[in-house]
Length: 127
Image (tube, rainbow, N blue to C red; front, side):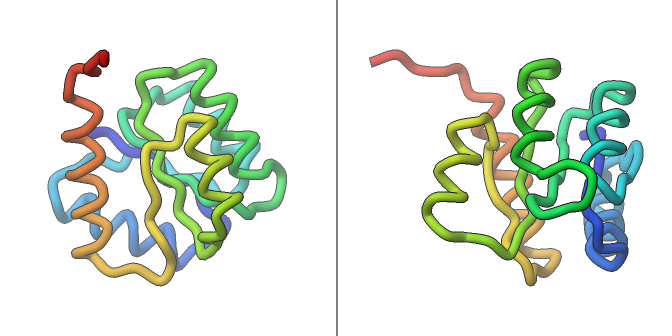
């Protein structure tokens, strides 16, 4: 998958880049704030966006909303240490497909990416 990483923490971006590229994914770009992340998402049109929630210049939830509006097929995984019920609910309601909870390791990241990609590839079933 083609990936965009949006996180204000350089170490988090480096870790995600290393983990994902090591698994064969192509990291198209990185951004350290919400505004730049949104600009890159719209320009690069990645399959997967790893998006931090708390960043300068653009809250991750606002960026998520805009990405889902303009790139509805993108898979957005929220990368965060915030896991309170309200934050999770708001992210899911606005199109996030999953969460990578900080601190994380390679096994967790790859498991979440794989499971989310498989779910996204499944045809939606109607009840």
